[in-house]
Amino acid sequence: MQQKIGAVLVVGAGVGGIRATLDLAESGFKVYLIDNRPSIGGALPRLNHWFPDNHCEMCKMLPIFSRDECSQFCLFRDLAHPNVELIPNAEIEKMEGDAGNFEVNLNIKSRYVKADRCTGCGLCVEVCPIEVQDKFNEGLQKRKAVYIKNPLAIPNVYSIDIDNCNKCGECVKICPTKAIDLDLTDESRQLAVGAIIVSTGGWDVPIAMLDTAVSITSTPASMALRQVMDAMPLV
Ligand code: SF4
Ligand code: SF4
Image (cartoon, rainbow, N blue to C red):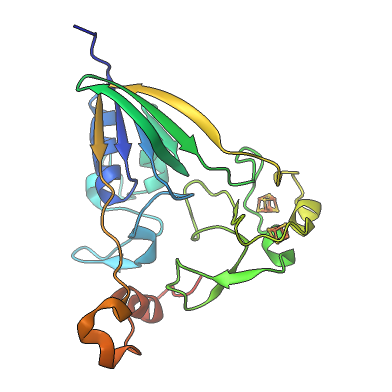
């Protein structure tokens, strides 16, 4: 029988995936936390304060994420765990094996920005001429082709939406750290893990898709309403 591997892959870095990651990491397992988006948090960054303890999701998480008695429940601090490796922009291409011993091939989509060089200064956004609907803000405002999904994103690294980029190069010219490279390509990575947790969460149903909404298509869906009413709306 093959030796079991003491590492776990968690797919989906929303609240469920993060919870599982922190528990496993605290139990001594190496955890790879992947998400197909450029930063983690799932729906959390789209909320401001949540029921029942009114904690702010943008910079804090529920007390269950705390590793000590500190009054701050900072997501940054807790996920900076030596057993946790975050792999954003990643999707599973292939998976083989059995419980205790899996081989997983990941495709890590390029963000066209070198993560170790981006300081999050935002200068690239100012010069980018392309505007597209901002899905993070429910399409209630636009974002640029170079963007960051939300404030305080983890990691705090900008990405280029290459499908909408016209390759004008203005962002490349202005970037003070030479972080942007429009020729970067996707990367492959192989992981060996003993278990896989799939925590991909749910998704929004556009209100126009609901039969009952035919006569109320101007009614905002709950997340859009939340964005409008939020104490920290439209970033
Ligand atoms: S890519 Fe460059 S210009 Fe854009 S936020 Fe990062 S460091 Fe600043
Ligand atoms: S190269 Fe693309 S992302 Fe950069 S400024 Fe031009 S359109 Fe925007």
